[in-house]
Image (cartoon, rainbow, N blue to C red; front, side, top):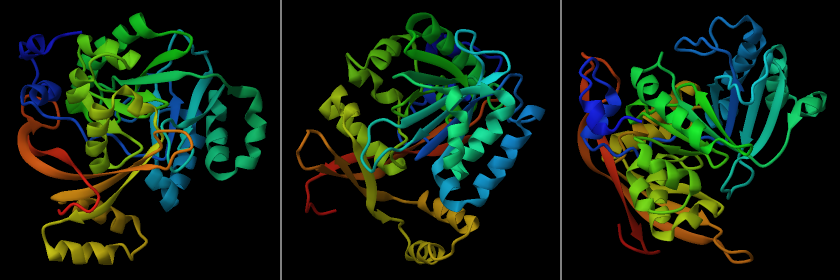
Length: 362
């Protein structure tokens, strides 16, 4: 894998991830938040959309349209594609992963895994989300076993950095860490190409970025110096943005065992810095439309600070522990969101999270 120094010598293209890393941008708080994941093996080539020009997936696109019409499902589901892998793929068949949040507190998503004829993927997706009684029809394609699946973004068609730096990472992981229980995949875009190479580690649902060779052993073995990985952690998808920043502090203070504790989080208070924004946000919450939800998300991006509660079950038969943090914008960094010689630089906020004792003043 190329080091940062080697990357900076590449003057043929301004890779956004090189600019980001040289600016010292912290990736924390950029993991996608999801209660469910649908991950589908899709043959290449891919355009910027892996679903385009795939006649065998037409019925799947119809299911996607149904998902978009279901407000609750659409908000909590994320969909990705993975490329076939010679170690485990079968011509004419597709792996389909459905990860679900199993409970309020959790540490790992619950997996339903199938490998079935590609033309049946749409029917399976329909059953998974809208007709679970009919899933029995697919029992013959169901796969079991305790497994780990690592998804590396190599989606060059979305951003050049993902191909340039994602492919070396993918090859390193395949060579050194792929086993019968640990599977490495090339994945479609899941945000954060300025942190390339970037990956998602399932079933935990943890996002990592700005990875170099020295980071791989502690990441894959979950041992060793976690401080070395602090600046590579994008966050856990079981929490929203503000909670992800706080959760990193708990991992750093509690150790690797923290990742195994079932947990959940919520924002208990936020400061938008403007009474007008607060008033508009309150009104939008009464409107049950996607447009209103999108506007709320845009308003929430203007949050100055938030009080976050993290609940965790750290011991069997013991009450949940409650942790409170104040997460706030610390400063802004000038960096680049996309690759390209003429890509504009913008200021992006950086965050810090401070633990609070219950009853502490804000």
